[in-house]
Each structure stands twice: as C-alpha cells, then as structure tokens.
Image 1 (cartoon, rainbow, N blue to C red):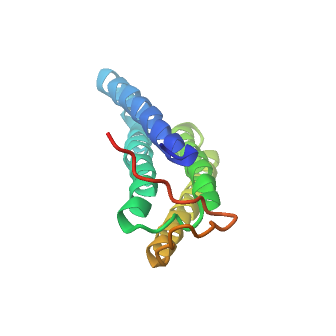
Image 2 (image 1 turned 135 degrees about the vertical axis):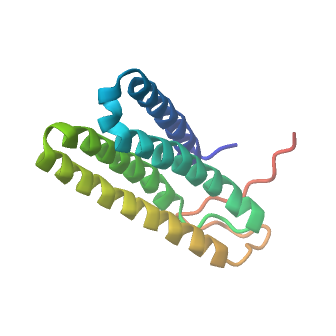
Length: 153
C-alpha cells in the first residue's frame, strides 16, 4: 500500500510529464515558443523526474533498510512545498518572457521553495538511514507509522 504522500508525488510527476510534453510539442510546432524552453526543462526534470524519484524513494528506502521513515509529516510537507515551488518556478520562467522583473521574482520564490523541499527530503532520508531497526512489537512514535508487512504479489 502506498502512503498518501508517495501517491501524491507519483501523480504529480505524471502531471508534470504531461505538462512538459505539451510544452515540448508546442515548441516543436511554433518556433517562437522556444522562449519557454526553461519552463519545459524544469517541468520535465524537476517535475517528472524528481517527483518520481521522491515518491519512489520515500516508498522503498524504509523497506530496503528496515527502518521506518524518520518523519511522515516532513514527507507530506515536502510534496506540497516541492510542487508549489515548481509551479512558481515554471510560472516564473513563462512570465519572465513577458515581464522580466515579475517573472524573476516568482522564479526566485519558487526556487527557494524547491530548495527547502530538497533539504527536507535529504534530512528525512538521512535520518531514516540513521534510525535503529525497530524491535518487533515496539510501539511507533506519534510522527511515525508502524512498519507494514511486505506485500506479497
């Protein structure tokens, strides 16, 4: 079973892929749209690739290590911060073509939010790797869920 934040990251990655593809097709059909290339690249790389990596990593790292995720609350915050930051960045890249200063301000805000999200991810997984393996039958803390048994196919 996927945690809600894992499902949100994977769905967000698919939405960003769709947006990036549409933007790419537009650039292919209209040479003037090449001005939006930075938005296209960020939608695909930070949107599709990074969001997919975040979602998959949050799902598999605790299972591979046998350690519970350090903070489910931080992972849930990360999904919202990362996607809001990326939306601001992509919007900033698009707006900057038409209004440089407003687009740059939006881009800076989005980039800062993206960095905060990335450091939340780094901290959360780093601490997960440092966690001692929980004894069978031990009670979870308030922020952590009890480990789930592996799903058999």
